[in-house]
Image 1 (spheres, rainbow, N blue to C red):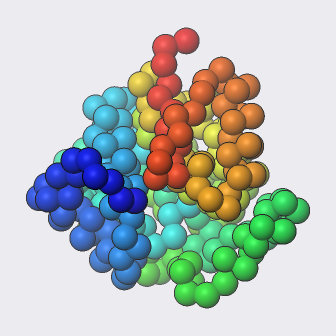
Image 2 (spheres, one colour):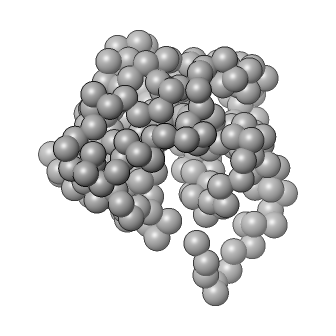
Amino acid sequence: MRTIHNADFLRDPDFVASYARGIQAAEADYSFHWRVHVGLWAASVAVKLEGDFVECGVNRGFLSSAIMNSLDWNARGKQFWLLDTFAGIDSRFVTDEERAAGILERNEGEFYVGGVDVVRENFSEWERVRIVVGAVPESLVEVDCDQVAYLHLDMNCAPPEVAAFEFFWPKMVTGGIVLLDDYAYRGYESQKRAMDEVAGRAGVKILSLPTGQGLIVKTPG
């Protein structure tokens, strides 16, 4: 994203180091500095609350690695749950509309990690990290926590994201942050409609960001 406005966070030492840790995890720079900036802010708010962190859609771990680096994760008394197939999108949960939009074609190539071993190695420096291998919603039952402070959804597919939101929303603590990676992203319009609908049922509205992300803060009541 480009802007004529202030972006001095790009020179902040913590951001620079944390973004670099994300590159190390992904073995690539996706040039999404603003998206990581939003993620680091969300995590910095959520870490002050009771509850664990959850990411559904980890891939190689760019954002979650940046967050753990920024928060000095080993000094925190929280679990970070990382859920993914670690083999790309599970085609069983792709809608007809998403198929027509070419979601499965984007699943091909070298972007998605081809197994969990490299991911386990990446996160081995941190304590209290729980890697859950499998497709959402089937893997959700393996997440054994009662309170969630931070939830990041990045599965590039509407049905799993809706299922994850419905599963974790009752566990979100007051003030907890839900970050949607592709909410307003071009080409993912079906995800936006699906998330608007499920958020509406929960009585909340999603803040649409120019990065393509969506943001929800769980307010009292």
